[in-house]
Length: 183
Image (cartoon, rainbow, N blue to C red):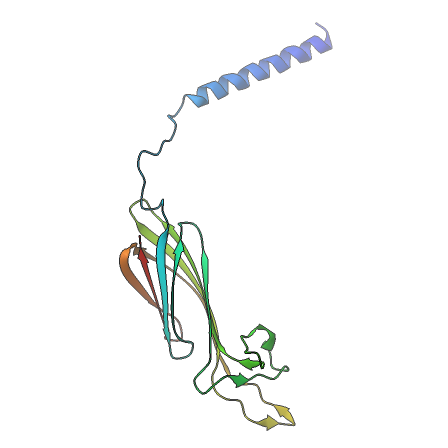
């Protein structure tokens, strides 16, 4: 048998074996069909509420589908007004400031729910917050002083129903974040 003919026979054998395996695999399991909608199919209204001495009291409602995430961002003026933030302060470029460059309170919450067919949501909550603790001292060595900052960076995971019930979690600084979900 010639080399070309042997190669052709070998390729034909491999192709026949592959097609046979594919054909058997196609009949190995019935196709998956969706017969009814589940709680995970539709959008759900989530309300995120923050109660914090350091970062303020804020609340907002958004509609999110399972597997998506949404960012809730707030900037508020601290009690007593925004605090001057000199440019030489560490991390001053990453802090929330007003139009005059004064430090403000800020909190960002990323909500990422995954809803199971039974309607229970597994939620990942990522929180980043910063706030000036107090007014800075006037000057030291000819430079304006940097204000002390309170910061929180935390990731929390929990499960909750999506039937209107609320779940409250505590952050490391004592702030409370309440999440409620309503289909």
